[in-house]
Length: 453
Ligand code: TYD
Ligand code: MG
Image (cartoon, rainbow, N blue to C red):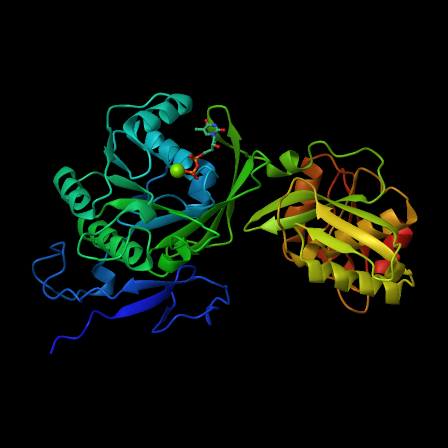
C-alpha cells in the first residue's frame, strides 16, 4: 500500500529537521522558526549535470594549482576577503539583510570583470531588466560581455548556463529560485538546498564561478543563508548599519583563504566605493577635548583599525544601575566595570554607564579592553584624555594589562594617523621597539595607566 506523503518540519533559520513541529529549534535555539514541508522523493539515477565521463584517481603532485589562477576582481576590499581573488569554479554565498547592497556589490563585480572580456551572466529572480538597468546606470558603464536573465525556474537557468558557458554567474537571490520537482514553495529549505545543489554541480562541472545572494531574514518565512553555509565554498556576509553609509564585508567561511579579513565599503550615489583607510573613516567627527572619549586600536584580520570608544557615566537614580554597550560585548563591559570597582575602588555600582563604539561598528577584540576602561574612568572623573593618545591592551581580572597580538602594526597605524602617544602593555614594549615620532609608554596595570592619563 502506498504511504501518504510524509512531511518534515524544517527550521528556517538553520535548516534543522524534525519529524514534528517544535516551538524552539533545538539546534540554533530560535523560536517559532519551524515550517512544514513535504518530503520530496529521492531522485534516482544520474546526477543532473554530466560531470566527467571516466572516473579516475590522480596523484596529488600531478595536480597543478597556482596562486595566479585566481582572478582579481579589481575591487581590492573584496579580493582581500576572498583571499586574493576569485577561484575558478567556486561557489560563493553573499548573505546580508535586504537593502544592504548585495546586488549593488555583485553588479560592480560584474562591471569590473566584463571590462576584462570575461563573459558574465547575471540572473535575477527579484528585479526586472529595467530595474537592473536603472541600477547599472548609477554604477557606471558596462561592456557588452555582461548578459542579463530574469528567470526563477531552475531547469531553464541550468539550460542557459550550459549553453552559454559564461566565466561567472550571479544568482540574485537563491530564495527566489525553484525546482519544479520539489513540491514546497520557493524560499523553503528544500527548494533553497536543491537549487544550491544544482549550482554546485554546475560550478564544479563546468568550472564556472557562481555567486549566490542570500537574504538574511528575521521572520522565518524564507530560509536564511545559514541553511546552505555548509554546501558552498565561501560564505561572505555583508553587514552595516542601515543609517550609516559604510558597509562591512566579512568572511565567515572560506575554503581558499583565511576568514578573519574584512572589507570596508561606503555606499555612495554611484554604488559602493572602497574605503582604503577605515581608521580615518571611523575617527571622522571625533569630539575635541570631550571626557569619556578615547581612541583604541583593534585588529581585523591583518589590518589594524583605530576606533573611538565613548562612555557616558552618570549617577543612577534607582537602585539598579543601567548599562548599555553598543558595538561591544555587554558582558565584557560589565566585567571591566567590576574590575574598576574592585581594583581602583571606584563606586561604579551607583552609576549608569553607556559605552559604545562611534560609527556603529561592532568589535569584540580583547585589545579594546584598556580603551573601554580608560573611557569609563575618563567619563566618571569628567577629565578628557589627551586627543593625540591611543590605548590598547587586554585587561585581566586582577587589573593587569596583558599582551595583545601584533602591537607593531597597531603602533604604526597610530603613527600614520598622527598620534603622538601610545599606551600599550608593558610586555609588548620590547616587541615594538623604538619608533621615531611617537612616544610609547608601557603599563603593567590599569592603575598605572590611569596615573599616566
Ligand atoms: P541593493 O544592492 O539593492 O541591496 P540588496 O540587494 O542587498 O537588497 O542596495 C539597495 C540600497 O542601496 C538602496 O537602499 C539604495 C542604495 N544605493 C545607493 O545608495 N547608491 C547606489 O548607487 C545604489 C545602486 C544603491
Ligand atoms: Mg538585491
